[in-house]
Image (cartoon, rainbow, N blue to C red):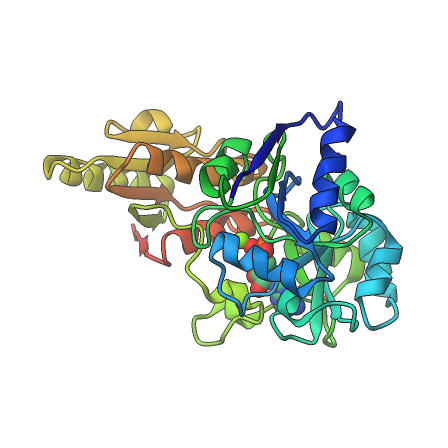
Length: 350
Ligand code: AMP
Ligand code: MG
C-alpha cells in the first residue's frame, strides 16, 4: 500500500492536507493522526470494514475494542445508547477535550468490530487541533487505537509511526511530539461506581475531585482478577530487550542496577538503563536514558515510550529501569513500565 505522508504544524494547520485525509476516512481508509496522548491509527467508527482495516494494519487482537474519537457532543450522543448522567457531564466539562476516555452503553450505530462485540463503547474528545479538524472535516466519529504495531511501545513522535506503519495505512498526518505522551485514562461509567480500567493522562486524584468516589479495576492491582478493559491483558509497550524494574530506596536501587549492569557488561552484553535526572550521572555502563526529574513525573510520562524505542534502536540486550512513585500521574507511568517489563520487578530491601 502506498502511504501518503504529510508534515503538519498544529499552530498553522494545512487544511488541504486534512481535507484529503478526511476524504480517505469517508472512503473507509486508514489515517494516522497526532493527538495529545499518543498518535492514533484512525478510521470511520461507523463502518465494520473500516474497523477491520485498523486491526489488520497494526496486527491487533480482534477482541480488543477501539476508542471512538469525537469532535462535538452530537457525535457522542449518536454513538452512545443512553442519556448523559450528571457525572458524565461534569467529567466532560472538566476534562474534554483531553486524555480521558469514558465508557457508555453503545448505540446501534456503532458496529460490533469497533467494540469487539461488547455492548459498551469507549469515547474521547482529543485535545489536538489536527485531530479535531480531521474529525470535523470527515463529519464522522473516528475509531483509533494507538498507531503502533500491536505489542510495541506507543508512538509519540511522527518518526515512530512512519517506522511502524508506512506502507500499512493510506495517510500519515505527522505533527509535533505528543504532549502527554501516554494514553488516556479509561473510566467505566456503566457500573454503580465509576471505575478506572486503565490509568492514563487524567489522574485518579483529579477524577475524585470532580465526581467523588472512583474505583480502580481489580484486574489492574492484582494478578488474580481479569482486567475489565480487554486491552489490559495483553503484553504491551514491550521493547525488544528483556526489561527489569528495580524498586526500593533510591541509593540501593542505583547500586543494584550498576551491579547488574557490570555483570552483563562482563558477559559482553549492551545494557540499557532507564534512569532519572537525579541519578543519571551515577551510572557507568551502556546506554543511560533519563526519564526526567522525579519531582515532575509528567516529564517521565512524555519520555518513556520514546526512551523504550531508543533502546530498541541502539539494540541493547537488557534493560534495567528505576521504579518511580505511583502517586498521581506516576500511577499511569508505572503501569506502562510494568507492562513493558512483563511485570518483572525486583524489590530491594535495606
Ligand atoms: P488503545 O486503543 O491502544 O489506546 O487501547 C484502548 C483501551 O481501551 C484498551 O485497553 C481497550 O481494551 C479499552 N477499551 C476500549 N473500549 C472498551 C470498552 N467498551 N470497554 C472496556 N474497555 C475498552
Ligand atoms: Mg495501544
